[in-house]
Image (cartoon, rainbow, N blue to C red; front, side):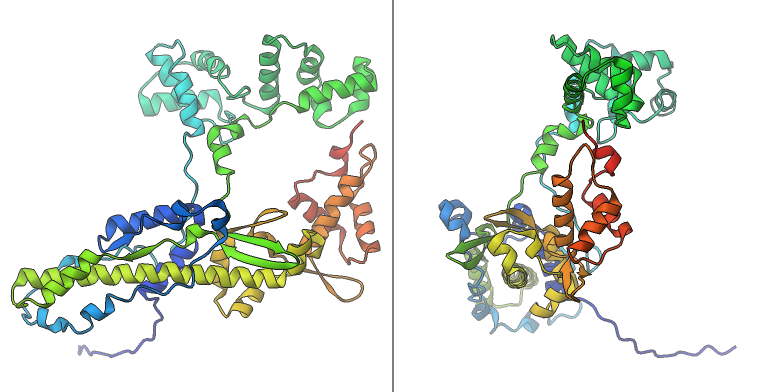
Amino acid sequence: MAVGQRLQLKLQQKLSPQQIQLMKLLQIPTANLETRIKEELEENPALEWDLQSPEETASPSDEFESTAEEPVDDTVSDIYNDIDVSDYLQDGEDEIPEYKTQTSLTGPDIEERTWEDASPISFYDSLLDQVHWLDLDDTEQQIAEQLVGSLDEDGYLRRDIQAIVDDLAFRQNLYVDAKQVESVLKHIQQLDPPGIAARDLQECLLLQIERLETAGKDLAQAKKILEDYFEEFTRKNYDKLQRTLELSDADLRSILQQITKLNPKPGGISEGSEQQNYVIPDFFIVNNQGTLELSLNSRNAPELHVSQDYKEMLRHYDAGAKKNKAEKEAVLFIKQKIDSAKWFIDAIQQRQQTLLLTMQSILDHQEKFFLTGDETELRPMILKDIAARTHLDISTISRVANSKFVQTEFGTYRLKFFFSEAVSTDTGEEASTREVKKILHDQIDAENKKEPLSDDQLTELLIQRGYNIARRTVAKYREQLNIPVARLRKEL
């Protein structure tokens, strides 16, 4: 059987290292850019960061300045443009050093990385620190650590006690019964924040009530409602509560206020969660007597340059005999590091220019909003619109919009906030879905809470204002705004 050979031509698009570098840098928010630069500085000794960087020398007013237009440091180009690298590669038997083929760009060409602000202490670490102060023996300590590790992000113990018992037996060779686990759970439930390690909402609220009663507050009626009439409370069946407990409107209102002050998600108030809510804006927009001025956060413009020592080393080797194998490898190493430094500096500056170009296009498209702060002035805008304005790829616009924030005189907004689909009006024009949601939110805020508006009534109000919208769409927008149905919005 004859075996033949066949030649096949195949076209394949592949991103260059510079493009990959830029893509990764684009998706990094300002708060994490410094960390990324420090990583590069550790990997590449040919890259240096001027200690007199804008963020260290600038006054608060200078925060609005940008150096995005500064040219790339190309002085090193003159150093080795005249060097013939072939002089260092004459011996064909010499292998190219491993560092020549290595790169810090790993993974697929388009690598998605989520950048999050570091938290000083996690929710679970905080609980474990408290556990260590409890008067527990070694067995109880292991049970307590297992319980803490089984809590969900809201601070609830959703797993069955018997499942915890099984985990301890199979994974830690610790054989205990459900009563022992229940006993340790009682200790965990006395930790901070109050309500932690509850198995459901009812137990969570009761744990907080008991903690407040221990502090001397009279919450007997609130506790009775939570213990005996929890279903009526969650369904807002206030008429039945009043009749059964013989409460006046004022008494019931006071009790409900006591209950609604409790925290239904105790795991959400840890120090780490608070830390993650802090936002460093990437852009600033200032209204200067009717003229909107855009600037980039100065942290996005670090003073990076190629090391002078590496430039001198390259000059030194260029003047040498170029015959020694060690010298050849040294030159290749230096050139690779200098190239890498130049690429990174260029990518940082391209990042600045891309950020400014994208944000300027958003500003131009949504100028009325940035002048007034009125959400009803937001125009329909999708990624494709900004991509067409900037002549950039949609994926590039998406990377910028997903992780960046802009500070205005009306507040700080994520760039994704300004993107929305279009809704037709009765005049044939297009309105932003964000505009419709704002009107919907305002209508619900202004409603009579004793007789809240149904979705049908909200739909009718929107139609009267000229928005052609279906009831199911109103319900979807209401849910996206985290607004409950009319029955659950009812108040006394």
